[in-house]
Length: 257
Image (cartoon, rainbow, N blue to C red; front, side, top):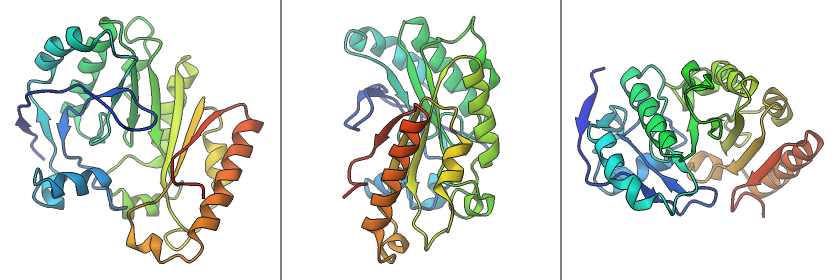
């Protein structure tokens, strides 16, 4: 797949998301093609920015992203606590080398300006991030992980990295001394997949923080009769697990009734 390019007038923005500060999205679309459905895709389609699912799955790189950062960092630096990558795309999109290369340059530029980054991916973290003499030791790295079942991944996150590969790349950064976290959102209801939450939690018990959130936008999840009871029970399990393992946690708004 050949990458397309677009230009933007701005890049950095202040997020309204409950656990983020400043953010940027240096790619339009995402080749992972998540089918939960993807909130970012639905939003971009509603706004007319992408035509359809196939269009969304053909990522377009913001060609002037680094130039925009040069202009915007001095403007916002005094207000920024950290910059999050990304909410409407994936900075380490699986098998998208050009996207990953630009993400590394963006993180490096922010770090050189004494701005730390938080990064979330369904791809694989490059090992360059673990080099102490390069990127900031204050960066925090996270993966999205809602299952360990690769057949489920192929159905709902068809072009993303295999779950175990994600975990291994995150554990590598943890072993290098970086703060790591996991976003378990959107966690699927049992009519989509029957699985053991504890098994998933155990697989990432090395992390510093777990964020847990419900599936909000799926018609199939609304067909499950006991959604409130299900997420209430799982929320308590997450909190209990995190307290036992001395892991910080954040329960997304609306997950627990």
